[in-house]
Image (cartoon, rainbow, N blue to C red; front, side, top):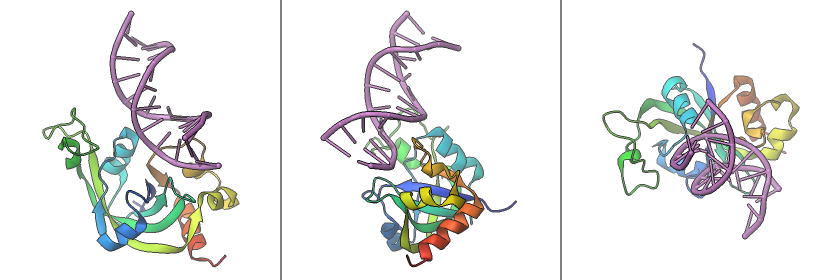
Length: 156
DNA sequence: GCCAACGTTGGC
DNA sequence: GCCAACGTTGGC
């Protein structure tokens, strides 16, 4: 099975590519959307490459690359009443929410902004450029992944 | 099962 | 800060 590629969104105020570089790797906890959960649980495999996208940023865009370093397991923040992502309906016997670990690969020297993604013809169809697309974990065509990574390294 | 109300996301 | 788009909830 060929490796898949992904895009994960994070608000840099909350957790940025710089934070990931400092941490080396992190558990991608707090995801409370079933579609995103399913991608993590069913499809994300160790070694899969990930575009790290800064949402709610100025400007928003792909800031770096990470990779999946550990497959899905239960997300313990769902059981913690003090956690902002606490979900009282989840329980340890039958966990609702899952997380993967992601590991820092590189920061892109040039942010590939949402505008760049939209204006690059060869990236037509990327989910993240679609209006109203809120999914925080999205599959990415491996060709698109390569193009974005290249754009992020090109002097402009 | 429908759908209005609500909360959240995220670009602008 | 605004608000359109979306997912979820809950009454019926």
